[in-house]
Image: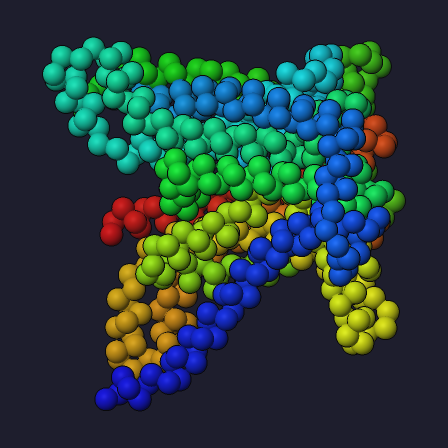
Length: 271
Length: 291
């Protein structure tokens, strides 16, 4: 009885709750949709409402040498960072989970700390160190800087997988006579691979979209895409930026889909 | 179980990461701290001497901009955090209590997708929305609601809006984990005892999610006080934050020593927040272990 009496006001409250959340989701997603609109709008400056659909800004983006050099540099740096951080981060996660290291909790926090400290300070500190040691600003310096901030993601996703899987599988293989190396390559590695790969995808995106760490470490004419876009935006706000943004967003979205296929997104809810 | 407490050979796999972190993280931060106490580059300039003048310059602030920059950094961080909490909490609650797995995955994707879009790109999106000829002002003028464009950008308001959008996913993800661990039956019990949906939430779920609120807020605060791209594009010349000041010192003034001192100050503020954040997370996982 009381349930039926309560039903009406409760539903109104629930409707308001759903409406609020729909609004908040719109707030999250609308800006991305708007970038797409401007990327396709042919007017010379950002203006609203759009007057038509054209690919002229994508043309300008893909024809601009500065944009293209930056895009290729970013892709190249991000690819190397992907490989390096998978190797370094994957190995580190294994050591943390299976190595019986003393001070494990401290070490884990230490390897996560680049995520917690201001990235612009990591960039500044590396800039100072490179300046003092006189090595200048080489591309490998930028790559290692990106690797430093990407490795924590690989460690985190790999640790998540390592914590979830049953150690008895490894022990069973060992009991059945497999050598430690064989256990590693035939049992452990295939089981943690999704976590390592997912971390690698994150590493790629972290590097590809990286701005604060790159800011002080790039040289003129050798700037990554986010830095070039930032400098361009300070003076010009036209559709080329929107087109470049769309290229980045499409790349990120395809990566999300790959992630979802690889191991499901649920593993990342835990920060 | 297998190796007792002695490190096993697998422990050596930590070596590459340790090497990378020492050479490219610990040493550089040490160099930055050292540079902040020198008058110049001690390697190339033999006349460089140890000094505390960079810190004095900040503390006495004769130019009258450094303290303002520090305050506006903290103010922007605080407002961003509060707004991100107000926006993030309902989303996190919705996601944590969602029955349908598909719905959960879709909302999660909607929350994560902006996260995977670069900061520069998302700031650009907000510039197209909030500038004088942007989406909001154009629509409001077209509908005859205003005559002159509202000053939505090149101020702290625009900066906060864009920062909230960029960092709210971190708040949602932190809160979802915490709210998801609260036993839903507690709320149901309160409601069966006569509390309304709202009262049951305020008196049961909200207090239990307090550690998540704290952790998420500290995370968003730490991220937003170190933001550079968004305040410099959305704030224009009307907003000056500590990270913008640091970039100025490196880029235009070429004073890496003073930049180092500013960096150490920002680092100290962040470290306090990070330590508090880790304390709360440690206590959270402790509670989870007992349950």
